Image (cartoon, rainbow, N blue to C red):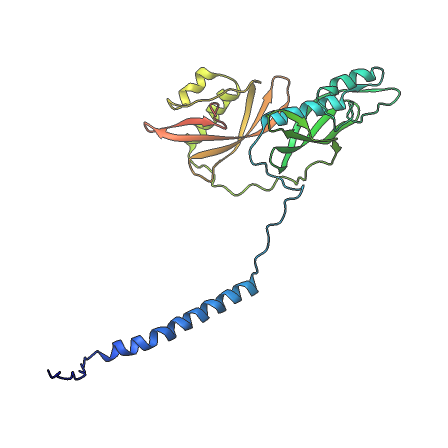
Amino acid sequence: MSVTPTRPSVSISTRPLWQIRLAYAVPRYLLYAVCVAGLAASARFAIAPPRPDAPSTHHSSTPSQPDPGARGYASLFARRYLTWDASEPQASMRSLASLVGPGVEPDAGLRLPPSGEQRVEWVEVVQEREPAPREHFYTIAAQTDSAGLMYVSVGVLRRSDGALALAGYPAFVGAPAWSPAPAPAPMREVSDTALATVVERALRNYLGASLGELAADLTSDARVSLPVLPMVLQSLQHLSWSTVGRSVVAIVRAEDGRGVQYTLAYELDVTVAGGRWEVSAVQMDPDS
């Protein structure tokens, strides 16, 4: 039996020239892209190298969330710490004993002189910072009858079980930085005499605690809270539009029943209803 030998076959196919060029060019372009990315990364690290996060210091200021309980605790400590009577030293220690812990002396390190006394007239938290979670430091202004106005820094811890504790000994510090009041921004003066009349009348009744008369110039949904100390409006000195344009700012001169005179600034929200001006708010929202 004879076997016919097979012969190799050759097939010829045609491809567009642009496909051939593209097939040879793609690897080269990919290599170029990798090189460009590497150069860009090198330039970025050279110009602005990454830096580790800076550790927080004790100068961190803004607390993440207000803690009214901790504020009250610090204020109570400051009041008791600064109130003392040299003739009754044990009374001072007893008042502080419930606020201090094992890390602080029972009397918070307070040593009284042979004689004298001091009373606190009022205290007010004027600054707060939170160097770490659950740790608050309050700067408290305390007006005393003997040493005058004092500033004391008090640290308070909010423990994991929710209890409050003194963070350590207090510190006497200076007042927070302050600067003179800046000049007011220029505002457009109110030229509408009808609006000026309504504002002056409304403020006269507002300061005089005449709610019935004031209601005539209020919108139907207005909510106002009258001052505790009634006053007499002496004059409307200046009236201008606020920056938002929906309220006016009135500078007035007023006098209380004792004869004390004040220069006061009131912002009033105003609107036109039925062809006349009405007031929808005076200076503050009593519901917020």
